[in-house]
Length: 132
Image (cartoon, rainbow, N blue to C red; front, top):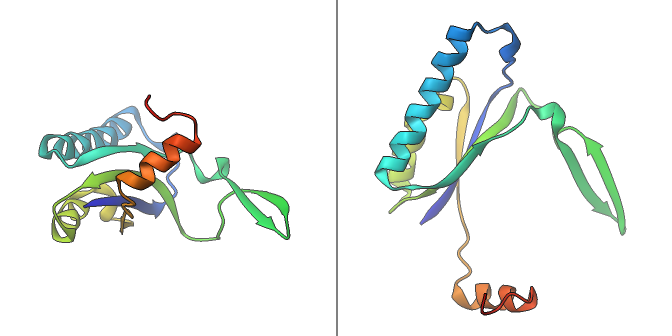
């Protein structure tokens, strides 16, 4: 089963960090990423730019509304994600507990809905990409 592992934590300002502190943080995340790759459970993942770069889009009564920033005020911000492919939720929880972001933030695991091959085929046909 695939899980989206969303990493929430306090917004971090790296401008006050020394080069050594930045390297230590990057090493910790690089080690974690290498571990999930070695385990064969990573289908990808990325860090996100700071929350100040976010744009929220809504459509109300047919009108598109955009807002600078995240959709909600909160002390924790979405900092990144991994797409995990695990045998079960217990395995995903084990991996999430090892994520550096779990120590001072929270990790949300969300199962991915699998619509199946027929749905994927229909999407490709509608996109004009069938047989590609």
